[in-house]
Length: 166
Image (cartoon, rainbow, N blue to C red; front, side, top):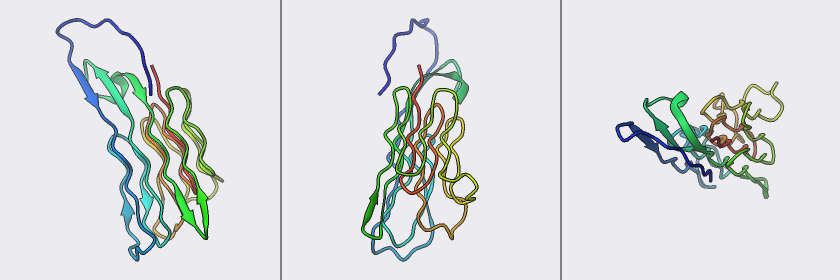
């Protein structure tokens, strides 16, 4: 979570975005489609035969404009988990300040998005401003989505959490 105090004028427009839970697949899935990330920046995942999840979206409050740049407080979303070959790969926790690393994907920070494990692997994408990293192609059968945040977490087998910001 994130917490802060801010004095605002009585006629200011407030926009409150509540982050959505990432989507998951079951072990008996035979589909090879995209699992969309949670509302407000959760990174997408690839739905394959191993259970996995996309990233959770960030929760934020915006003042004056409905824009990522008008956010005054952000709580980051968590990264997706994966269970593959009898091993669990845990996603990172969304941050009040910094998103934690997952087993593979890195968490977002106040100044930079989390990278996907082995950035040279084109299937594991870094997060970006406001958005968790997702999968790049349908042949990538173990990618989980990163959490949304001020900066999103990187994707991978156990994706990074997104950062918060005040």
